[in-house]
Image 1 (tube, rainbow, N blue to C red):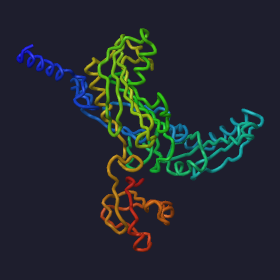
Image 2: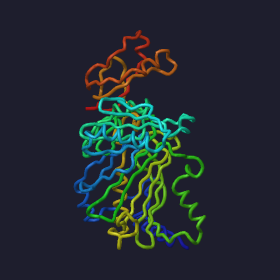
Image 3: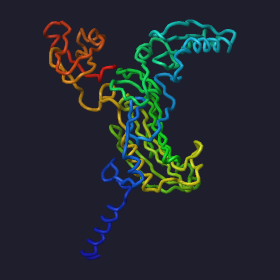
Image 4: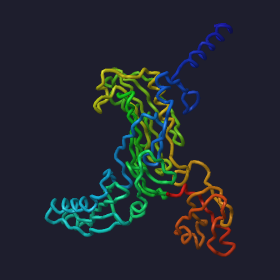
Length: 407
């Protein structure tokens, strides 16, 4: 091929690449796919919805659907049922005793705050023998009742931090949004399994959901990622692997999470989109597993059951990119601090209103004492308090902004 022919071929390749709507412009960042006119109308008005430690920007018409919430045990909300606190706690105690003649109730009384009841129990004599004491908590907040499949001192701070909220409210302090409730927490020490999805009335066959599991296993195949899992399935099934049209597949970074995505269309026209990031750190900031899924052609909670997909390939990819791109942490403060922490020293002017917590360098003889102190609420422009330590010790105290203060 002469020089002119090579140049023409190169230009043709570049033109094809620029016209490919589902390619990546750089590693982990996909090209934008323009919203169709009807999707532009849908996104003309948007709002944020809050679940777990996350927010998602969605069309105003979207309906948030909470999945199971575990923090660190399963939590179920009973709307407008606060007056049933004693009734439901008594019913649970009776349920335990009716299961087995050897069941024992070891505690039935107030939990960590007024308006809460904890039940501790042994289900049978084997549980007594092996020390397998169960715990269950009911807590009222506002007009609602919350059933917590957990108990004990471990969750006492969480029970005290529970408050009711309207699901349209987006709290500004660190913690976990649950259905009609919020649990203040900046420690990040507990297991968190958080799931939620949205329904779009204008697109009733479309399902979009997000889930995260802070402490899921990352051993073996669990830590290899989405694309490795897909490749293994292809290899295992061989000719039996379903016929799929791949629209886009590769690395995809969302917020602070470096993950992978696979966008395919099944033979029946169902769009099957998935993104997943594996966090080997297993922290609140980088949970072991965080991912999202979107399907079209859904009916009666069954994928592929609708007659046809309401979205073309272009529309499906554009909607996916817009929804997934709107996922982020709700608060940029510990334990989900994505930027540089905001800190001050004792006596310095506070740059941001909210909750502040003090620390000393590890190994300092007073470090544990300072760390054990409760946080303080300070307004921007006011001086930070001092502990009254010696000047040399006080100079080493660092105050870190923990988020907006609870109302």
